[in-house]
Amino acid sequence: MSTASKQHTDEERVIRWVTEHGDAVRGYLVGLIRRQDVADDLVQEVYRRVWQARDRYAEQGSPRAYLIRVADRLAWDYFRRHQREVTLDEVGWEEVEPPDRNGSPSSPLIDSEAKSELAAALDLLTIAQRRVLLLRYYSEMSFEEIAAAMECPLSTALSHCRRGLLALRKIMSENHS
Amino acid sequence: MNDESQDLLRQLEQATSSGSVDRSTLDDETAMLRENWLALGRLLQSTEEIPQVEMPQAETLLLRTSVNVPQQSRRWVLGSVAAAVAACLAWFVWSATFSRNSHEEIIRGPEQQAPDQQIPEHDGLMDVAWDDDWDQSIYQTALSLQQFHDEQRRRDSSLNQLQSEFVEFAREVESGSL
Image: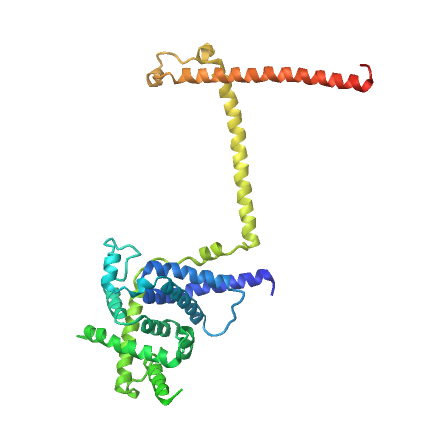
């Protein structure tokens, strides 16, 4: 394949990925990090990394899983760099960053009922539980793949998943009532 | 992997499957986990549907990251630059011609204008004429420029004279007539 046609193919592939999987990548990052402004920055970073690594990409498995893995790695790097932010609970967030009454794009997940419910549901989970559930939901990876992405034993990933689903029971029962 | 993990894996695969699962085949706990999973999915889906910050345009993203601009785009860019340069050149030539004409008018000064070009006093235009000394200032500036220009020309002529004397001197040295 000539260089020009390969370049064209790479461009088409990345454009298709943005169109087909952009929402999933963003959804994963918003759900995990819980800050839209940071998630939006990381979405751009995901595609920048993917574009830079386009020559090394080998078509194995689902592209969505590949993108979510890149997003997950970036999110994890973000958590490592901003560990204090991660440990803040909802009250802490209110003190550090009061909600924007104008509803700017960077305001947290509180500007709609659905977002509030989701925020409440995600609040019940630890980061590890949230990570497993969101990886499973958005990337449809197998649990073995999820454990590999999280660099933990399979049994640990399974345990996070089960506990996370059990923790969600509370909010679900509140919704039903 | 031990049996316990195997059972847990099977249970969670059923509970979190993206396909449809026959609920009657699930035990109570798995069914409950599945309910929670589906509810979480609904919440995630509903927030995705809420208009949020626009996704980055793929084309913009590629333009920003790609250093290898395709040949066709490069030609288009070069064409645009050439057109812009041509437009600037045309404007420059036009403005230079215009400013030369107006410069001559300024040098002559308001009182030296031909009588037929002077505006009649009572044709109504004088009512909207500027009531300041702007014309006078422009005239003074033009005179200064003219003086500076003449000064330069004088210096040039003395330099030219010096140069021609040097040339003459060099010629005499070459011919050995000195």
